[in-house]
Length: 335
Image (cartoon, rainbow, N blue to C red):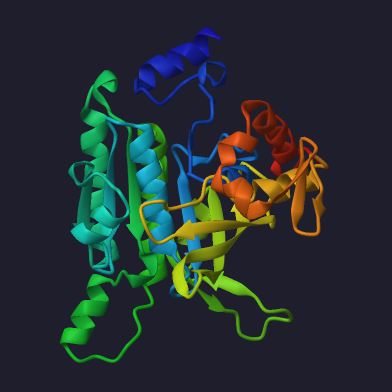
């Protein structure tokens, strides 16, 4: 044992420890949706990992940016002294968009990046600045990259300027290298990161299959990969948001290949916190759905009425029961 302690002392950094001294307490970033928390962490009171990379993948216009901003808003609301670095590759995030989502503009830094090399350099520099601060002075922080698929490479830009019509075969290696360096740094700094990415149809697959672009770099680095698909949510004739099907393609915190439906509004409401809990309770036998109405406490109530005043029905006692159901439905080690 003394020999091992001598090795730890000799190496002499803050991140080399005996296994018995490692703090393996898992931290989470509440997504703003109870059912989505359950899907990605196994608990409706959890969320996406608090110090790892979460990938949000989907086709164009599936709400990836709105989804990311909803999580950012919830992170800032839950951490009044926290802030966010938003790496924007699509020039899609501006002042009016952030204001419309109810996000505090004074706590978000929008960093425009064009190439993978530029993103890697700026992200690593930001983490290093953060790690140089004394631990007690580090405020909660999160990163967002929106989106990976739009990042170019320096070679690709140079070839285009020289009118060379060639594909940059180094792109996937650059992506892999960037995340290889970032993953450990983010873990050391306890900084969660959301990365959005595009998906494409796999040609020749036996069954319809979606795959993320950009090679295997993000696939290996991400702790959780969520695939999104959607349908429009209308209020009368006006489209007010999306009903999104979220599926875990990879997860180190919960079961894979599970899916839920969540509601995402286009305004400051963001993700509907209680949407999906009625279906979860029905799965767990907490109540029944009879002809579109739920039997709760001896009353038959329509879902719309329940979700209009959720706190009346989703009491702390009911929420604890729903969490038990979520653990059974989504957690590793459950049937």
